[in-house]
Length: 84
Image (cartoon, rainbow, N blue to C red):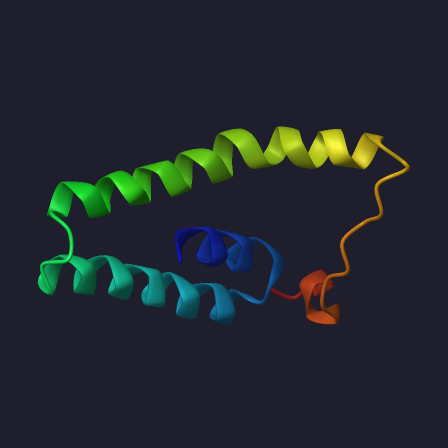
């Protein structure tokens, strides 16, 4: 949920990103509330998701952009909306 929210906040209109971040927080809270995980597990998952999206994703994107043999991903048209 964290990865999807992070990507949506980056590539979609602001309201979609906000909606998916609210959903990700809901997943985190409900996981703890229903006692499926301890709070530290949920926070560690949040930390891992944010760390990977900020530290691993940008170099990976740059590396993929340099490789002409790798086709670019097809993104929805609204991913390129400048009016955020």
